[in-house]
Length: 183
Image 1 (cartoon, one colour):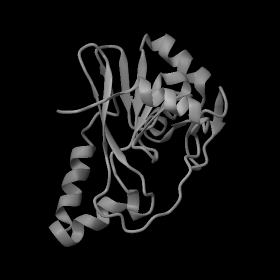
Image 2 (cartoon, one colour):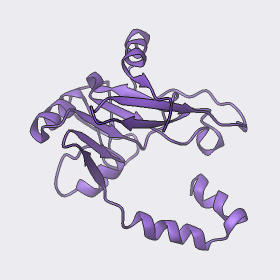
Image 3 (tube, helix red, strand yellow):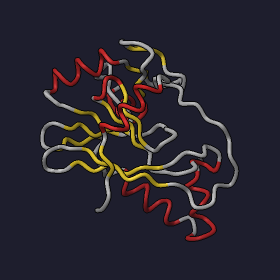
Image 4 (cartoon, helix red, strand yellow):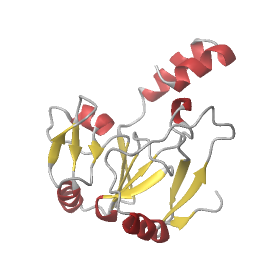
């Protein structure tokens, strides 16, 4: 188990973990904001047979356009062409997803129509990553608030497995996504 299960025990006892599981079991797997922004934990699905697994576990990649085997051993990696086709078919403008540690808490990927957001700073005490919260306003403009861990346990160098490492693209993305300043 990762952080939440082990952290809850000394503070609250085992019952609260089961309460959260009951809550999570009732949450939807995906949501649609203003019919234009698809929000999901994992990613897109290749088949109806694996829809639930893919919505929870699929990851984007900037290293290709199609479908690829995932390094996680379950689900798939999907590239820019897959994202473009899904956006056209579903008539959406943006996909916001989580499920993948990214160094700055959020990362704009696959041609700026997919954003990964990760809301746990210093994941599992080893990632030395920032966290972020994204907000989408009524004009469907995306803003973010970046959060860092107060006391990182130790620092480990990380490299995102599916990110485009071109720093000029990253700088352009950082300028395009506006900073979120208040709730």
